[in-house]
Length: 117
Image (cartoon, rainbow, N blue to C red; front, top):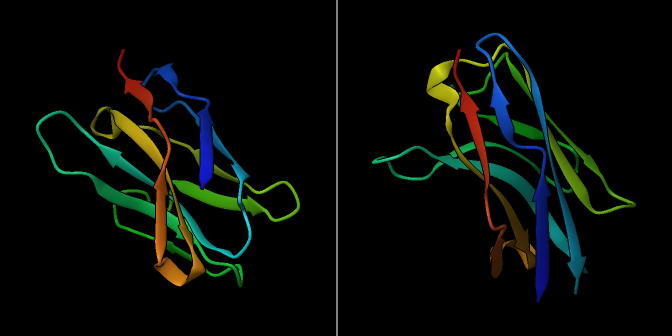
């Protein structure tokens, strides 16, 4: 089992920045991909970005150019730096981890991000 603890959500004005962090603990061997999803009210959960074991990153259009994902392999943490936030970025953000190439998948508890003036 892998436990994920997220931090860093909150309320920010449009154009502001937030930094989300997720720390993995437990049986953390062979974690392959770490990433972030989000779910806005009434909408399905969607991928924001992920970073693979080989450090390659992938961004969906929702965060491309504004968000940066990074990973600390020694500390087993993944961070999402979000800049120039927009009201449509308001959602619950979830950390996601794939282990053993996707055989196991784990989710964090979610952290609320609200972008509003």
